[in-house]
Image (spheres, rainbow, N blue to C red):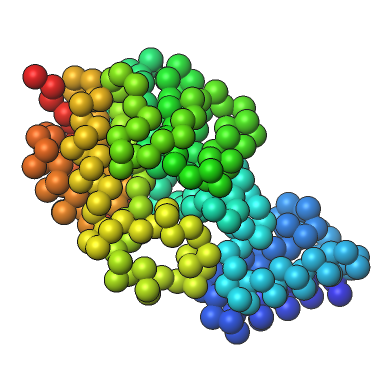
Length: 281
């Protein structure tokens, strides 16, 4: 079987299984099993796969057909120009979250030595990215679960980014030390009802990173209220939110005294980020 034949076979099987991005995923899989770039694949498409590559391809397709996440199969995923290790026990970085990074960077652009707190850090992609883009910042990442923490630490080392990583329960207001110019969080925000209607791939991701309580707003209420005391004067609180949650999260922030509250859309034109400023008296 040549690379071209393998690519076409992969496409057909993924498409038949109802996988929406079957073309993109097939390209990712071929790159993964061959180790070639897209440009190299174009020049070597008639090259036969060796036995190991064919077996690897077969195994990967079998995993995808049961909707095991491609990101977990490959073991790494790209986010804001860096790669992050992912696997069972940690939420997969998504392009939607890059909008949250844009807001974070804008909020501290005039504060080169800003202190930043990333709550519910998971893979660490938010805090690590902020530190990587703004090396003079002091960034702390807070994560509760050991499985996720292992990825947080691994990704900081892999990307050679010096951040402080703390094990802590955000719902107990743990992990904060002093005052921060920016507190950012992509917390669990799936409602109890929606947990039953998730895409098959998402069901392989940790429920602890998804479940946000009966209305999906448990973490927003707690963070907006309890971590406010850790925001420096004019410090910014920024959240990623789920579909149709922006208005409710903005209301939560208003109720807790935040001002200059704004909403930012993601690349799909969905209201994805809510942020505001805390005025300390």
